[in-house]
Image 1: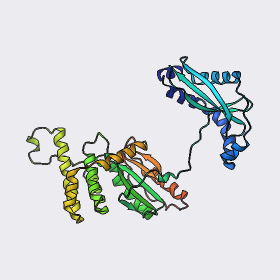
Image 2 (image 1 turned 120 degrees about the horizontal axis):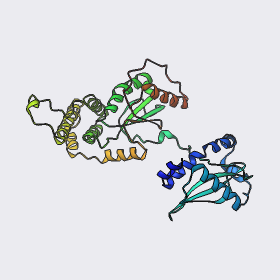
Image 3 (image 1 turned 45 degrees about the horizontal axis):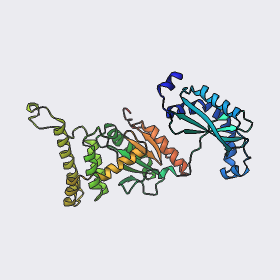
Image 4 (image 1 turned 90 degrees about the vertical axis):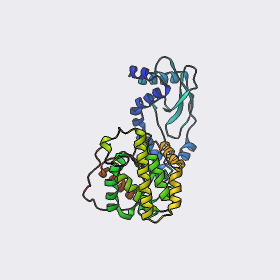
Length: 350
């Protein structure tokens, strides 16, 4: 443990180890604390909290020694215990443990100290007052499946050049709609990754169609995912005799293919071709970049990424795990999940 702490000398790494080391102590008090908190509001606990005992130098020293020994805190990091005050939890006060390094501002960590000065615990609280299903806005995007009142909403961050997104799109979502029908509403948002050179162009073209026709948008998304292996390839008869492709040629050819798919889909749905062509030519990626930023802010580090009533699933995973998340979301909404059906072929990787 000591060597691992010294190799990660940042205060942040030290604090993470401190928290990990104190998990056993946390478990000793969490059951009693949570049982009490479940029947009492924080405000009520605060009103009845007793004035904390003074934090004596001896008690502070014991806490410092405990933390240093538990987490092997390096000698060049100072640890100071301060600010004992009443906590929201019966039988425990709150103290602040500051970590100092090389003249930097202190990094505080909150602990619980029993009122008899015999037990220290590290306890975190988290805000669950917000409905997680509102975590990701649908922003008026084209949808599939049920109406806006559907009990389960699935927001998918998709990359049209991503092979795993293709697998999920072709295998998972038809199976979801076949089983859950109008109980599930599906919306796609854009999350093209930098390694995919034509993915932003594809997303912009999809948005151009979406402004005129939701069915055209979905036909385009279906078509691009289905033709992923062929987009950007040189299928001419002289391919074998021509010079090797450069990356620039392949990207240019892919963008041309995408434009042709967009215009063909637009024509099939009788959209305004003048407006569509102007939108495709402009290639305004502002909305796509905003969607990418939203995904980054949500902690997405790869695609595909699904939010099922706010519950995130990342990667192309077997369908039964997605169904389990949908079933749990339905039960939480007071709905009965439909009977299980035979599983489709699952995506073959993460």
